Length: 276
Image 1 (cartoon, rainbow, N blue to C red):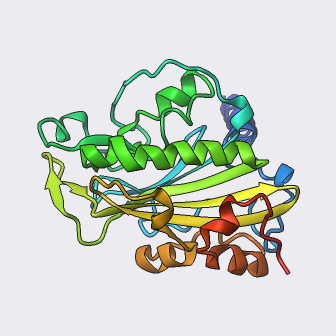
Image 2: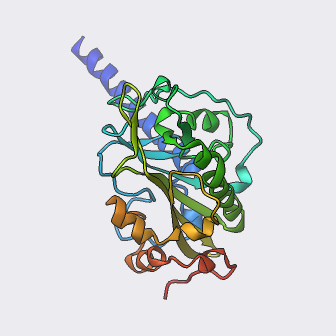
């Protein structure tokens, strides 16, 4: 009997290891870990992954994006994903907002936003998560949602998301880390005390022909008629404000150059930033 039980345990362990390997392969194929094609130069002994450090200690890897969840604020401090523009489909938006079962401490809930006056603003946009029904469904986890002023969510933030999709088509690949700036919130909503951020950011890395460039944006959580380019900043500036270390697995020389750029012209021009 003991021999039989030992055999069963070995079989179960083998199945778990096999499932882990398959899951990792699927995630690397479709998620933010697919970076070999970009010819990135990573620091020695670094994992092949491009999400930032976490100040909360709760990183969740969904199939099509990863996040760092802040229980204190009941939302993600960042969501990271890679845009593969030639794989995007015309997937019907589901609007299936729901709790994220992967959040150990429990995510915000739909009723937290009801009657609050704030939109359920996506961090990884539904239009970008339109690879298939699974990616679309994942985009409606409440961990991928943050309270946004309606005029902001449906205005300048939406314009920036559209530009990001356009820039993805102009590059071989585009990596995005986006999230709220959680210090000095403007409000708190719902029974779960969801923090309403004062502003939001996007930190972008674009790769083209083996070369890399970077830019970031910080936008106040309010309606604006300004050009999105007027909100361009360096990734370094976002790091200083949030305390998060972005793209730290890049080779240090490359990281220092791309994260220091705040010149929007270097980002939008066809000529790419090249590490010296």
